[in-house]
Image (cartoon, rainbow, N blue to C red; front, side, top):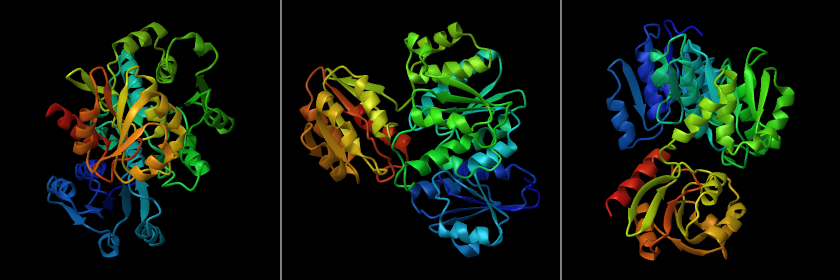
Length: 418
């Protein structure tokens, strides 16, 4: 795509939108850069202050008048592609692309892209650590605190990029072509955005649409929806979670990362060394502090029921759980059995608390709280020595927080101030 002498408007002034705007401002080709965000809050205003003077900003709305002179619109992952203002722009002949597509067009290095409902951050992180053993400079990007666009100017041709990719980001790709595409799993999620699971799967499958016989697809053999995707893929296929993998005492995330390593010639023994040294990732079953014999665990990254089930299955002590937020069309009754077996009390917050309460009625004691601070206070009041207070929301954070990282940091701050 030619960016020379173009007017480019960025939709979204949160973290990734800000980084896109800053990247474009450093490119000599773009003649005019603008940014617009429908929200007007302290975070957005603070981000607007970080923009160089040449970038014009619109806050509190997306207006036709502001975008009418645009040649290209770049949308952040949280922006719906079917917004009326974007439909209007397309009708006017304005090109609409996503942040991942922009990054790909400017990226000189091969890309390993990881998608799936659960485990993306862990597998992307593990893969980056394994690929460093090849001697190459590896860039870790995505919903891990480091947007793709922030890294672009640092990436060289001989480097590698490990990129976490969501279904939202895949909706807007056109030419995006990872050399290795990893599809971890598919479970009920984001049904507030998609009409059904078929639509959600279709968005995930887009990660493979531009691959050819020189590329690789890494697929979870145990997940039927993912396994069946292999029938329509042109790239070379590597399965993990096969019968042979059962001999390894490794979880799915480790097996997926090892499959990526194998493509790049990294030996199994070296991968196992990486796994042994892996300390986990922030906001995923992260131990925060022990207070009076009670462990506090931050699992803010668990935005799905399946992620919380995984967390519960990996804890062998009595649990008081804090959950809730903005739900995504989830069926919370699917976790009722695990809650009944593992959780002695659940404290609910956020928009989804009534829906969760109805689904889990009878499984355990259920309390409600108005804030995260109140929920921690209630949990601490009821916890006994040897218990675990687990913050595992099962929901998105946007009803009360900026994102899951903001939510996790707030939880840790509350706990550290006890």
